[in-house]
Image (cartoon, rainbow, N blue to C red; front, side, top):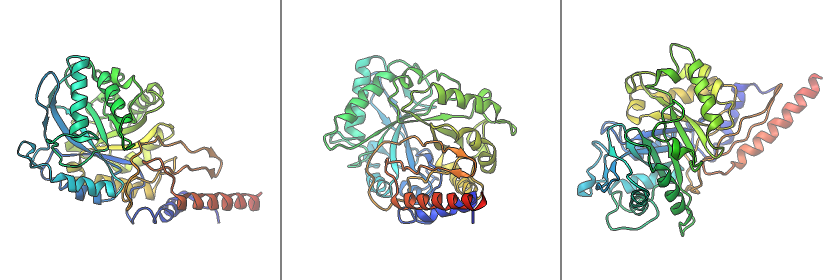
Length: 375
């Protein structure tokens, strides 16, 4: 019996069961966490099994000689050492295979870089306080995050390319050989006014392009034309090292425009974007809105029920073993030759699940036999 798309998705989920529990994501989903005390704990966020990456938002003040300020809304007070307890949550997330990053900037921050030496100072601060360096004043205790996200929405674009280069040098010099991510969240008009020079360095592992609050390049009234055109530009002109995530609001209340219903996302938008070899997944703003609407749960359900043209790639969340701390790798677009579909199932740490690989080989053999019987 030939394997249809719905059966194939179900089989893929079963094949990956040894690495991920029931309910694990079938699409790579990144989510911002930290800007509402009503969004639940970081550990609980990761335990849903739906997120491959969780981005803590934000380090909202830095640069130009300012004392850096970590703003996690109602979750904790870093000034009194109250955020050190998050180290336990971060370790819990990482043990599940969920990458945890720190986002710098935000829409309401007070930040900017005045020179290359200023970029060096900020990079050193980030390294020593949140990544592989050492200092007595680490705001998140002993936690070692998986990378830094650039969410630069205000001020000048100057020297963020320097910051990207310096952070990358620090990453490579890590004595423990740990791998770190460098990500960014530009607005969908290309090139991004604040991050253009930084993105041109080609140093970012993935880029979450925000397709909302920008009517000229977002989904509107069922029309995917503007979004599709912008997506094509981003995926063609970004350096090849970067995978591209589709940045979306998780609720109509999360943005002034650009909201896409999960079913419409799967049936109308993903078929447009997932044909690109650079397609990496979905980034949601934010965990708070996702909790209110159930967006990620609906998305996962919709992908399993009615997958887009490209087969879903298993998410990195839910893994019971410690992560290998490798950077995100871009998904590859499956070839489409009649009814035979070749699928490469790679996880966010760059490994391939052996159970899934064996299953795919068996399915391809079975499909070939089916075709021979029909010939």
